[in-house]
Image (cartoon, rainbow, N blue to C red; front, side, top):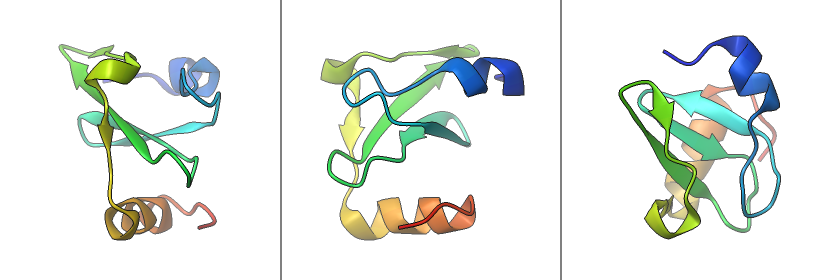
Length: 70
């Protein structure tokens, strides 16, 4: 599990946007890129080439679940 302290300093490597923890993923709060990064064995894989771009509806759902503005 990623600690709150670590989550507070991590950011999206592409846009420098805040990340939210959603299960085994970190999701960028940037609406344009909507990147989702996986977490393997408690280690975030923050590689743009290995990230997934979420569709708008999925991204909005995750942001609302975590109390973020969409």
